[in-house]
Amino acid sequence: MSTEFKRIKFPTEMNVAHYLDKKGIIYKYEVPICIIAEQTNQRTWYPDFYLPKLGIYLEVCGTPKDRIGKIRRKRVYEENQIPVIFLHYYKSDSKWKKYLEDEIEKIEDTRMNEFVKLVSSKKEDC
Image (cartoon, rainbow, N blue to C red; front, side, top):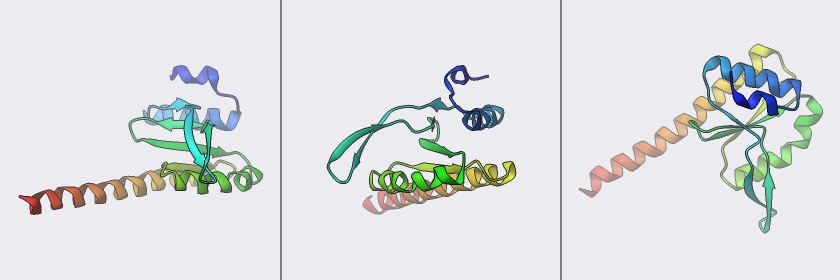
């Protein structure tokens, strides 16, 4: 069981933490990150979870209303090239869990494609 459990504020986030723990995925809760918003304003945000071995952040949307508020955040994360997954926890367990797995797979596929480009260009340089 993660030592982060005692810091978690909301039941939805606690359930996500239990799922990550069950899967053996190491996470940190509300790790501060520095972002640039509106191209000039530096801010500190506290995404719900950080998965350090994957280098991915998770934001938990507990209700459809939460999702609306996080649309701007998603754009800012993208502008800062920060990999984040917005979990729509208000959907069924099987849907948000499958979504999480699918999104991690997409991110890892993108990373692998970048790695392949690097390795193939390295061979061409020789």
